[in-house]
Image: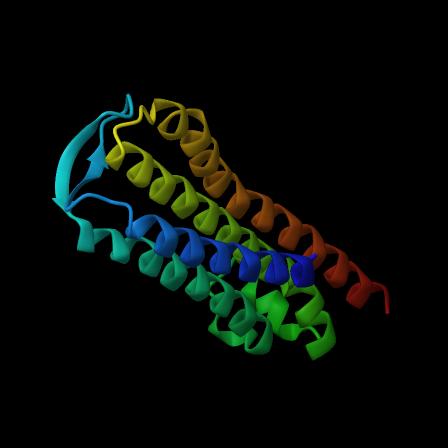
Length: 172
């Protein structure tokens, strides 16, 4: 799953940069940089401010992916419930127990890249005078909800893996 998400995230990142580069040349000098909950622009900035959006998305998504990989390579760096139990496991068992963390961080990177696709597309479309309420509404809220659910899923999956490994250690 993590390999698929890594490849998918690279494709999303390339698409984000490509689309933003394509859209940039067609934008007016003054563009919307903030929207209200109904999707109406309520803040304005220069066209150059558009360049920052994909850069922030790439930086945050890349950081998420890097943290997930660092967790698997060095479990002692993680601040998680059951850390003492995790560190008692053999290195291979630690990597297995931390796989949900890596997958969750890759999933968070995916969601962040999708979020920035929505934000950049909304900014571009609004700069062209189009209504963006259909982009700002449900898609944006669904992505934010998924970002809140992913860590909960990861904690549940990791607790189950740690409990199973702990049981195996007791039985051996």
